[in-house]
Amino acid sequence: MKPTEQKKIKKPLTIEQKIKRRNFISFGAFFALGGGAAAGWKWLLNSPEENAGITGGTRAPLRRALNKTELFFRNFFSNNHLVKTYPKERAAKTIRVNSLIGIEDDEDFDIKNWKLEVKISQSKSLKIGIEEIKALPKTEIIFDFKCVEGWDQIQHWAGVKLTDFLLHYKLDALVEKNYMGLETPNGEYYIGLERDSVLHPQTILAYEMNGKPITNDHGAPLRLIIPVKYGIKNLKRIGVMSFSDQRPRDYWAEQGYDYYSGL
Amino acid sequence: MKEIKEKHAFLMRWTHWVNFPVLTVMIWSGLFIYWANDAYGISIFGFTLIKFFPEWFYTYFHIPQRLAEGMAFHFLFMWFFFINGLLYIAYTIFSGAWRELVPKRNSFKEAWQVLLHDLHIRKTIPPQKKYNAAQRIAYSAIILMGVGSVITGLAIYKPVQLYWLCWLCGGYHFARIIHFALTIGYVLFFVIHILQVVLAGWNNFRSVVSGFEVIETEPQIRDEKTLTANHAENETNGAKEN
Image (cartoon, rainbow over all chains, first blue to last red; front, side, top):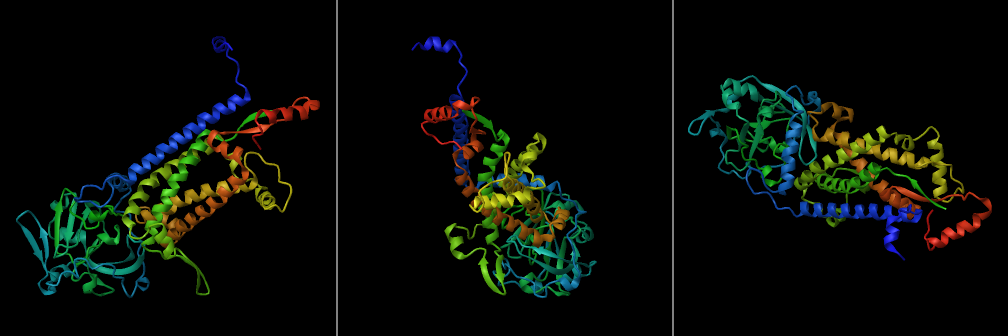
């Protein structure tokens, strides 16, 4: 054997050598990439939970992905995209109650004393009674209410269009801010909405369901109906309305859900 | 004589192996989402045959109470699923590989013969190129199913903004049912696919990793046929290549 001499003369590879070589390269790459993928998956699975703040409860990289995905899909949002509406007969007679956070845990609540508080600035607030709101033009909607859990129900709501309300109380300047925050009177349930959804023509402050005043379980006297969002954003029994450029606190976003939750 | 026969292009292999773990994550996270409103089942005359899914299933796979987590994973990996699928479809169209994949006019008739052959009822199998008729149908169907999952998924995900997609899918309810049924379809496909791969053997499996198959070719000189064949067999120490 003379290895030096063999090196000089490049013999064409035999079929067997070719097979071996290609197997080696492809399976080597296969297992290397597979190992890489497994490591990446392990990293994601074990990645630390995000710092609890406005959002919380999910792995930090997944939260970044949710926020990026929100930005992408917001490009598709338009106030001309309306949720499908149905004839009255299709509306459910018994409207499903899914959650009572901010309602059942508020024993001091007295509906007679209720007023909607709109925060104009740090020190200034507007207090609006339900009769004043009912005096504004009424908008009805019968649409398919969608829960983040996956169920949906055709429901009939009526109230004042949020844009009508904002215009009437001359809150246009405040709406220029990026977000609106809503909270129950006891502050136990709270949500944040970006401006686009606030100004959507089908977003209403509802005081009627199936032609009758809203019941306590559905958020009497005034609740939000926002068809471009999952049910989790349709806050019941609105106590405080505020505006900000940063995301307001949001109950379910703190529990690992997407902040946007738009449909 | 052994010969290397190119079978699967790099992009086909790449997208195949990327899709496998990605789809697994999609199904796994999808179960977290489905659990929150597990409305589906199969019943006949009011008698429930199958409930999707029984409690033991949820317990075994640790499914309950993970909706938020499931959505977070689902809405990240949907990107990988979509981009990978798009890559495969674009490649298959532009490379002309679709000619080997899309069923031909006689594929449906032939697929029946392939089925009978695979079940050992029929001895012969119709002549085939890269894929046999049954494979053409199955592999084209699975791509269409992938497209269906993306479309129905988007319809459920943004039913208001993408209202036309939702309408195309027969509404929110129906889109969700299709989305779920397709997932069950993937699982059934997987079971048969694995079984077929095992039965087809090593040469076939290797081709999806390394891209080629090794075939035995007819030697040039007829008289030396047996001799060369034996020789080749000795060389590989009896390693079987079909």
